[in-house]
Image 1 (tube, chains in turn blue, yellow):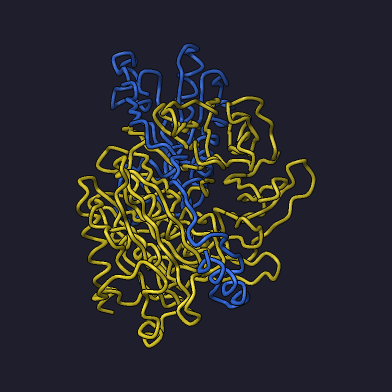
Image 2 (cartoon, chains in turn yellow, cyan; image 1 turned 30 degrees about the vertical axis):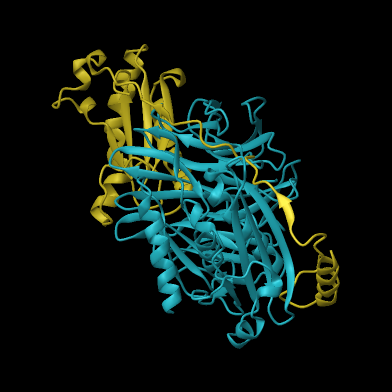
Length: 179
Length: 425
């Protein structure tokens, strides 16, 4: 106990030194039990995505000689405007959607890997929204189309080169059964 | 230097001993004004699965705020202040010394007690006795390191906190949680589709994140206590960028359900989404200011992505970043004084800090693709994602840029780090 008091008083004298504490310990050693406030993990949650059902996709959308089999639009860096060259492609898909009111489309916007992952989600969304907007103007209905973003999370090509980046700056149009 | 290498070697050995792939840590650079300290072996600590003194040393070393002195070859090891040869430690320029002991208790548990000593004054600064089970060696050692760190630096230690991050291995994505030193990684979620943007609830019991298991981004909240998770935002379009409010009751999220990426406030259970921004531009990456009344975010409303601040109650929106044409991913320190963000300079993406009062800026990192910064809860370190070769890796830098660490996992891509909060106990 004498030691304890001595220690406490010397500590009090030391208060103010840069590398010493200001607070006084009330005992030479305090008793504690390491808490288990943070419980250990209860285990792994594993998710298995549902598989697409390609058999439900009409053949006209899969025929390589039909423009409807073309599903991708590409963009310049940091850009989301639909290039003029894709107008005929979008017109063909808008016509198909307006003639097949039960058909559903998912548009996925993608980005190259540069920059913030979350900002790229927003940029990919801009790309997908731009495609959707044109399809609606060309006769598709709001209820048929959902535009979403995959950001930079699902790259088609993984090299850090411009040819690769340009493949990843892309919107893909998927029909029901393909997603 | 020999001691430094020895301690790193030991750390690696410790890490390799664990069967699971662990983050290994390599430290480069060193801060100025490091406190010279010796951590002596604890008498009797051989009875434990790991030496407490080794873990304490590695923690203090990693913070960059201590200069570890060689503490081997001391015979006999002191356990009381009166047994310490202070003259010897004074000659070695030690400012502080740690001594301790471990004893087995009758019930099979252990008692670990340590004392932190002021060498120039030859006195005890403080001491604690812990009762621990055989499984609590690392927890106890981190608590001891936290105590020492706080007493000597005046800042609260973060050695007992945890980090979350995403590991991509082939086509498998895992959301993992590890101790702040990268050890003890556990998988909370495994998926064949990407996982991103993990964010810790303020009490450290839940993680919000974005998962692509439904072919589009959906926001979940995952309880680390029960393992249960809940969809918080799965609206038409994309759902992303979760950020917790200080009370843990609400999340700021980015939804595109009404056209474009816009910021909403939503209950942590998915209730009552309320739109906060109303522009035709991109508004994303919300982050609550510590006052809880304002949100920092990224917007391209001015033509290029820049950082802004808005009041949650509506009203004023202020632009915060000005230099450069791409400033994203804002995070604010707990004291509200420092903003960190990612800036593009030429083709490089680097971590920058901005003193919000003086507007003084500093580039903190020198990578090519640095992203996703996250403050340690004491504001002293920043964890972020970088690339080494063509692979994602985690790194940390002190908030003054002086100390740098690299954390890596063998044969895996690691990204999206988030440093968890203090655990109150």
